[in-house]
Length: 512
Image (cartoon, helix red, strand yellow):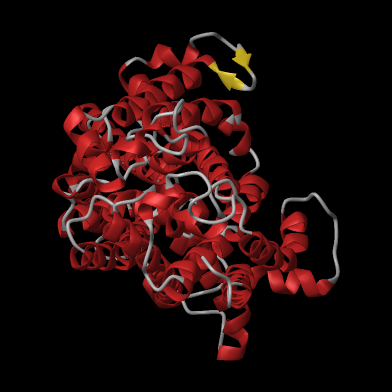
């Protein structure tokens, strides 16, 4: 959905004959300089809006459940996000320098046809997360409607379709349509939405913290809870897998970050914006969640701590007319006040879920699917394909067994894609020394072999040590030799190291 001027300027960069290439469409073409309008605030807001999501909210709770105290949990979150920021910034550079997407950049290292392998895998992972986030947002919509129309929850009686009730299906459909609508408006609509979403979600979270701390009369007991680890030796077996998990949390964005940075005005602005947005927000929002949960445990003495880490649970108690756990009266006495809280709470959850879903789980696969057949699949069509697959994976069933599917299949595949980022970094920074022939990437056979065997070999070597542990995690195999289950928690680091070294050595002496 680009105007004629946009495409004319893009073809001026590539040459008019590229328009007929089967590898070209206007959505994959380099962004013309006049359309590169994203500045420092935009990139900061992008990460702020993506990081302000329910999975981030629960990170500190998951780490503290393993025995960490509050500062150890925040240390792990901070270290993981500082580490993953490195490959993100390295792969962001060619996006801003050449204005190209992730699939086009992947053609340089994997070959014009070989690039379809990592891009499709990355797209399918995003489709799963897209569906899960749509289900979360849909449940918030359902709760919102039910707060004003209680009978809504009774629609359909006990009828279900493929395991989902009618009220949940309606909420899912409404939230799904909202995601697709924004994508159909194009990347400028994504930029505008992310710019507005970032401060709104932050303000709502701070407001919730102020209210619950006032009610509790302080920050609650979690900040004085001691660590279960007395020495570094005791802490290490939990520290490293925890950091690996934090790295894997955003590792897929280290692949397709060029999808965003190609709109950047300058390298400085995208680097500063991302450095300000990612690690600080992940640490800050996790701290907010920790303080809210801690104060809530003082306000609701009868509630289980693991439940309080779920913001939907807390907001459900706040809007309930019945007494809170361990209380003799409702948390909020006024029915009017509960209705206002319900509206604000659902607004916050919907905006937070929508912002992370569009940026992290739709933009990337929309470009990835477009790369499969550029002459037939546009960015908008790719977004629609993402949405359809997001329905077909039946995310309500994925959510029924999160340990296997979220932490296993989706989280594991995301971690296994770390080697792809390493191969792209090695190709751009070491092999090509930041020099790309962008025109050749759009012309069949001009940028090297259709499949680069070195990249595919490096990917295979990097994935192999982690595959047995992944199959155990996803319950495909019951057991494997202990060596592989020991390696798997370090999977992102081992995979990235092996891929980087194997690709760099394999490309020595090869003419590119």
